[in-house]
Image 1 (cartoon, helix red, strand yellow):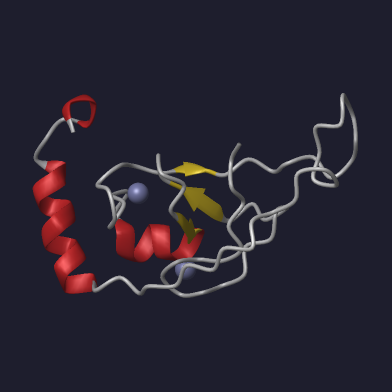
Image 2: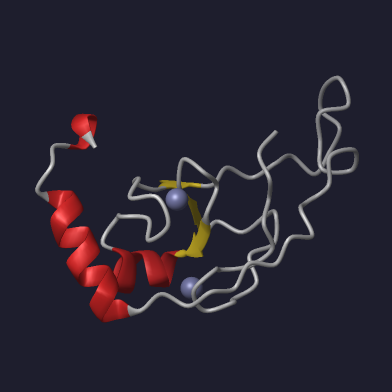
Length: 102
Ligand SMILES: [Zn+2]
Ligand SMILES: [Zn+2]
């Protein structure tokens, strides 16, 4: 199941389950839209993968108990700031490789 991590790994901004600002990588590393736009360059600093907007888990039980009330958000706090200089080098290297071959 998708972890819904509670904040941006870089700036620690809160990203509650209904946030439309959360961006996740293939390993669910979670960042806010601002860090995604300004620092990350669509390259995850931890794995080199890209990002997609995190979908909002329904807060109401629309169907079969698949909702936030049963599957609550993660309590994991991951805050390790990205070094912008090191990340710029890393993302430049990754971006030389076509997305499907990374
Ligand atoms: Zn952020
Ligand atoms: Zn990642």
